Structures are given as C-alpha cells and as structure tokens.
Image (cartoon, rainbow, N blue to C red; front, top):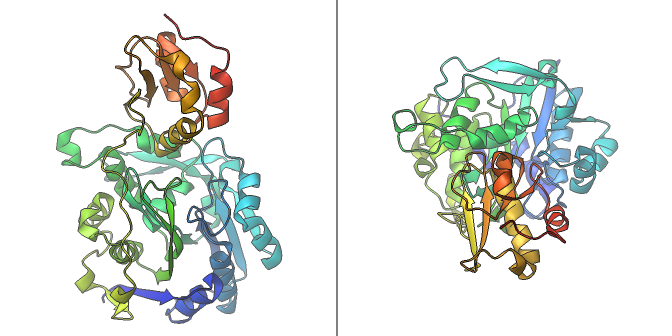
Length: 387
C-alpha cells in the first residue's frame, strides 16, 4: 500500500491542523502512552518559524483525546545551554500544557540509556533520554525549515531532540571516510542511521510559518499556512521538501534513509491528498552552499562545528564586529576558530566554544556549548590578543 500524506492549507494553525488530522485514518490508540515531540529547543516566540507553533500542538492533543487517548505527554530536549523552563515558556508550550492539562517534560532531566544501532556503519549506538521507555507511540511535530548543514530539517531530523544532552552535538562532530559516506556528509549519514531506531509513529509537519535561508534559527520566516500529516515520516518529509521547492532525492539524509529501506521518497509512489497539492508550492531560499561571513576582515576556521556554534558566531559578529579591531593579527584580519576538529588556526585566534579547548594556548578561548554572543563579548572585553 502506498504511504499516505495529507496536506492542509489555512491561515489558522489550530484549525488547519485539525482539518488535516480529521482526514487522517488513525489506528486504534486507546491505551497508548503518547509522547508529542515538537521543535522547541530554542528561546523563540511562536510564529517566527523557529519553533513549533503551540496551537499545532494544542490541536494534536485535542484530536488524540477525541480518539480515546488519555495518556499524553509533551517533551523536548533543548540545545546545550538553553534553559528548558525558559524555552517552554517562551515557545508557548508551558501555557498549552497547563490549559490542556498535559504533562510537559524536559527529556534531558532524565538519565540516559543506550540504544544499539545494529547495522550502523558510523553510529554503533546512541544515548537517548530514558524517558522514552515510558512511551509506546511518538508524534514528531517539526517546523518546515531549511538547515545550513542538511538543507532541510523536518520530522526525521526533529527526532535528534530525543538524544540525551551532548549526544545531540556529537552527531555534528563525527567524521567518516569516503568508503563509508559515499560522498555525503558524516552528519547526513549519522541522521539516517539514527533514524533506523528513532522513527516517529506519526508526523505532523508545522508549515504554518517556516524558515528559509540560514536555518534552523537565523534565516527568514516564511509564511506557508500548511500542515502535513502522515504515519510515514520519510514520505512526509519528501512531500514537505517538494513544497519547499527541493527535490527529495537531492536531500542527502532523506536519500540515505530511503536507501536503508525506511520509506518512500519518490513522490509518484506516495498517495498525496489533495492530488493538486503542488498548487501550494512556495520555494524556499536555500541555505548557503557554504558557510560564509560577510566581513572581509574575518577569517573563520570551521572544522567540525555544529549549527548551534555557527549560528552563535553569526549573531556575535552582527552585534560586535565593529569592536573587534583590537584582535587583528599582523595581516589586519580577525581569525576565529570553531569546531571539534580545529587544527589550523594561527596563534592569536579567537577560539569559540568548548570544542576548541585543546587549542586554547594558541589564542583567546571562550568556553560554552555554545557560548552566547553576549558571553563572547564579555569574555573579550578588556583582553588583549596573545602575541
């Protein structure tokens, strides 16, 4: 049977989600203990295309209850350095959980447990939140966004939030040889292997307001007014990617997941309702093909940095670039090193994030995972570069 993907279009996030869910043939969910996993790992207000709109979560809770589900929990594991309570309040999840009477949990407050990846080439096992033992059904509710490392981030990549604490960042820091990755990034391979053991049971993609360009946090909001629903996460991601103007086969982690037998990404082999769904296509500006800094006097040495560190660096430079002239080296440039595998930065560089600590004798080290822009600025204040 062909996988089914429902697409709904509307202006109101709650109503549009309900319309999509009402059309979807749910299995019997009575007695299930369900975890709703939104994208709420950052301090961002609803409607900015960064985090899942709380009304999409609210509509999901209501529909599940109408299907007889009594045990529903909303959970997220935030980025390292982000206070979960603050994030839950900022994103609107705290209010929704109180209004709807559902438990809201920080997945990283639980112990970790290891899950083996039997056929993994790059990943043999991962650490996940032990809270997952309590659930037998997982709903992934990501935002429709571009991503500077993976082109798009949708329902499958959203499951990375189930990884425990720093395990999330570890996937960005892996290396693989050519015989293993066949020309793909190590991160894409890692996501596809992670998906073999962390695939959601239901996908609801929040495309009410997405993000284009420098996603997942510093791009531009993109109003779409779209919700996608499917029990087949990979097919849902493929359809969403197409609505964003991308060919699913060109998204490496989707292609790798398909090759591993996790689902269908060829659109002609997916049952998509309505059939004329492409009338809602609205191409997203893609992420930059390579990380670039719009300051000719700044040299960045990026070796194994995650998107969180890169995003922090961009924000820092936008706010404080004009104050960095004391850190010019002899070539009248500011040299900045980031990433776990940093090796080639010159003496006197600014070293951003904990991953660069092994090189801290070569310059000015700013700790954090990642450090926020204001912390980088306060650390540099009053310091002079090492000769």
